[in-house]
Length: 252
Ligand SMILES: C[S@@+](CC[C@H](N)C(=O)[O-])C[C@H]1O[C@@H](n2cnc3c(N)ncnc32)[C@H](O)[C@@H]1O
Image (tube, rainbow, N blue to C red):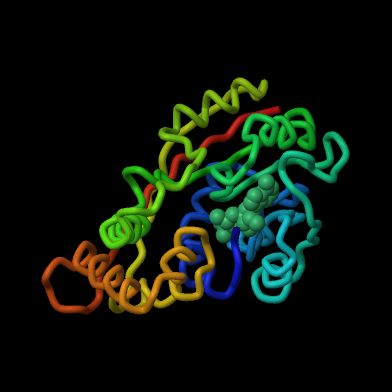
């Protein structure tokens, strides 16, 4: 599902890195706490979290974990595993944080129950997800361009939350207390359109992979269309994009 962690970092990881510090602040993890970074990927959250906590990164993908260990957060410990069956004893952590992964869980309710199980009483569980429908213009531009060029392609089936309220309800249903849900916005600056486009060609995510797999003609058409969506008819050059995420935290 996710490949090529170096291109992932250039495509989505830079957005994760921009969001991570504010997400850590929202979660409110105490200094020195033992914390699980669930779905750590290439380490965008592991790195800032390691500056204040004792972090264990957990992800099913060895290549991503290796990149996190080698580049982002060498001091953290890493364990391969999935959210729905966490390989940790009850109450192992003072907090469990998961940055931009909840849309990928095969069973979200079970995953949140597992996050709660491995958190000690009084500890924090926190997660977030991009507002894919209305708050992630970069991905929306690529999706719209792809649909225009490949109208016959089936729409991907996703289990994405549509609001922060939905994430709050998910946390309350798992039994978490003092649940708070909100939104967080970040902005990124790009030097030109290619800075946005080139990481797509490595196909690091499912949406990028389907573009990367097109014939060169169709890929070029997707690029031109996405460029027009992002830049209009103006000249190429620096531009800024914003993105918004739903964030949620609760106490075990
Ligand atoms: C969108 S990436 C986010 C990675 C990292 N947290 C970041 O923000 O850069 C999703 C990550 O979740 C992992 N993942 C997918 N399904 C998972 C599951 N069921 N349990 C744990 N991790 C999962 C993937 O391997 C991938 O590294």
